[in-house]
Length: 41
Image (cartoon, rainbow, N blue to C red; front, side, top):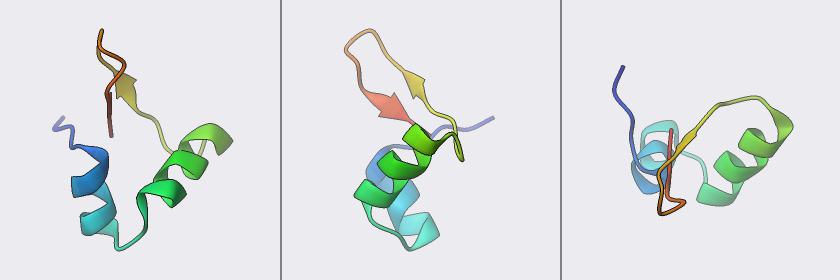
């Protein structure tokens, strides 16, 4: 599985980064967090 940054994901999906964050909090999409708390989708 390939993970992408929020910026890359927003460009691929044609939505804003805020939409991705909202979808993440709503449980619609999953992300992983690094030790530095960076998220990848």
